[in-house]
Image (tube, rainbow, N blue to C red):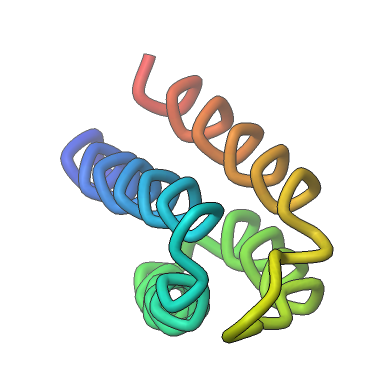
Length: 93
């Protein structure tokens, strides 16, 4: 994968992170985050970014969207996203 691929991944990860943070105060966004993360996983697999795909798969395994209550794994998911962002940043640099 080239630098531009990593930049696109970084952009999508940042969007996922922002969506996840919005879901903390808007529970309806939780399902949207889950759906977008699943699409992102599919894209990573197609790109051959298996190491990141495995991490996103783990993130999704702990993600259980709720409509009317706060996420039980919010801080864990946030930490996973932050680590993924750092990992991609290192690939770009």
